[in-house]
Image (tube, rainbow, N blue to C red; front, side):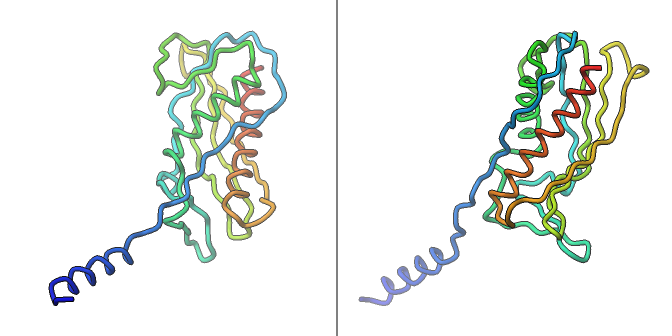
Length: 188
């Protein structure tokens, strides 16, 4: 083997060794809940506001000493805020079957009876592996902010293990419980 071929093979081997593995992609899934009867015909979910540390492709976990952990090989299959919107719309549609639920970011434009606004302040596993969902929720009639009902919702659950699939399953369950709380606010 001549020197040029050897250098080419050595460079190719080096580059192959530097290639990062394909990440494993995860998605939140809808979860069933109790049906709530209401006279509300339509609800528009505005874009969910996420805490900045959550707005990234990697799955975030809290760590001791005020740190955050991510793994390059464990990522969300879509932007977390958009995924939460999609799953929350599906969760709410199941809980409020006589109400049209749609996201402001989608293709549907209509005048809703209720506008739903959400600020997610926390949605991750703490150092003890307890998942925390902390969010502010506002429901208001389309006519203005003066008639808004605002509430803070804090939910926690512990996954069966520290694995990422169990973490995501627990997050999906908490988002379902969150939908229960929101459906209750809309049903009043």
